[in-house]
Length: 118
Image (cartoon, one colour):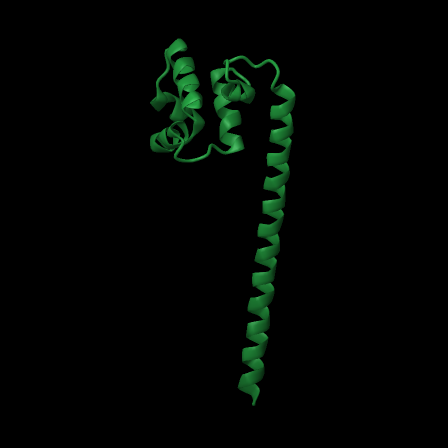
């Protein structure tokens, strides 16, 4: 992750930008950006895409050892697709859990009303 941080810092230096201005443009708190750069928190795909867009590089740039983008595009695209699939699955599970909680609540209400009849 330090390589990631170093690349972001180098890009910011080359563009005469600050981490503060970057965090503002990304719409995140300064300490959140610091957590990403320090490896304390994994950067979400959406934030990585926004970061790449702002710094005018592809997400692949941050993960190539030599700093180039050659050779890893297909691997990164595959990883990116897998991440998207997992995020979609998580979103689906969240929806399913919310539906189950709603059903549970409705059943409890029915049960309570039935026990009040006796």
